[in-house]
Every structure is written in C-alpha cells, then in structure tokens.
Image (cartoon, rainbow, N blue to C red; front, side, top):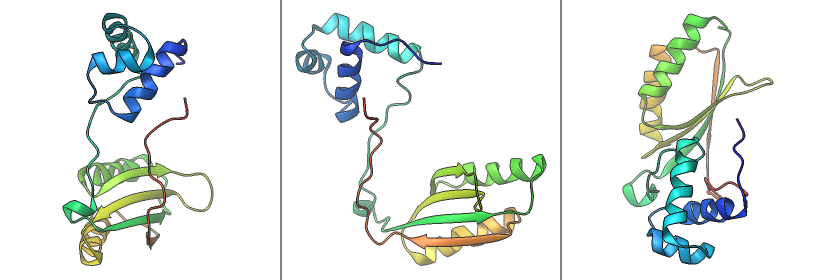
Length: 153
C-alpha cells in the first residue's frame, strides 16, 4: 500500500534516515517546521507502517564480527514443509542479517556476519544439520564498499 506523502513528509523521513536519535526540535529546524506538526507527521507515518522498527547501527568490526559471507543456496526441495523448516532455521540464527528468495539459478542468498571463518563453519554445520540443501556456496566479502538502509526519497 502506497501512503500519500508531501514534501515535508519526505524531508522528515530523510532526516530520520540520517539520524533517528535527533530531537524533535532538531528535526523540525532541519525541515523548516515546528515541533508539533513534525511529531504528528512522524506518528502518522508510523501508524501507516512507513516508519518501522527503530534501532541503532552497530559497528560489526568494532564488536569482533570481522567476517561477512554471502551464502548462495540451491535446493532441490520445493515443498512447504521444507521451506517452513528452512525459514525457521534462518530466523533462529542471529548470524543471518539478511535472507532473500531469488529468481534464477540460485534459490536463496544470505548475508551472514560472524567473527571469523571458524564461526562461519559452525553456522554452516548447524544449518545443514537442520535442513537439507542441494548446494551451498559461501563468498567472503573482502571489503564493504557501501552499506546503507537509506531509501532514495
């Protein structure tokens, strides 16, 4: 469902994407409005589902999570029971930061953040013990060039 928004809504969202921890006063000044209308619009956007969960972005490397793997998964299983078990396995693994079902030769791609290659192997061994997969290819990211959650408003 597309929500009707005006330019002020977009400015507010852009500022929230930059830093959702800013005060309402600061956001209001940055978008050229006052505090109450900004608060009302944020509440409206949250109620409409445009604004979801608010979190903080942590520095993975500073916390010791130095390895990022992109895991390509092919399966020969295409039944609901397998998919339910696979999705549960992914949801139960905090190492999985993203998971996407794909069109094409690869069925799924995962973004897995771990401390090192040994930790990835432990993740891999646990995953394949929980669900049967046809083929798994793990690609180690050598350098993160760009990572953002910001949408181009």
